[in-house]
Image (cartoon, rainbow, N blue to C red; front, top):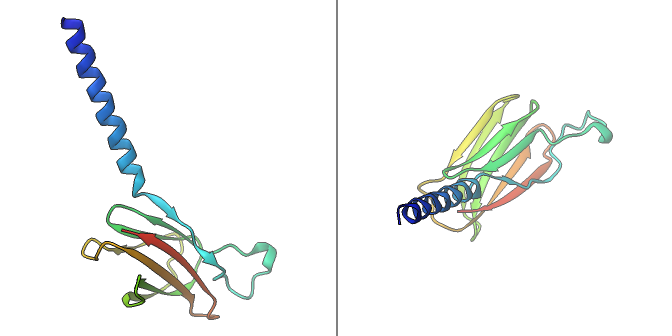
Length: 126
């Protein structure tokens, strides 16, 4: 009987840990960015989008891997502008767009390179 109780306790603990791990990772996903916002001076073979974007539980995380002057805009699913900002030279830094007070739904984030007007976009859901 004692072994059965220990087994049930360990089994329920393992279920709790596995569901915590799945929930924790579910909102920490990379947001696919479609388009090219590299600077025109770079050759095509060397061009790398200067950002990597993730969705966390409470924010969109924009990681800058190169210097770029960007305008970032977020639109809701009916096309209303929800958020807009410009960032300059954030190389090696992370910029957060917190969405905890936004409505549940689908959103589109548009990145515009202010040096050459190239655009890229990503979509996410909260």
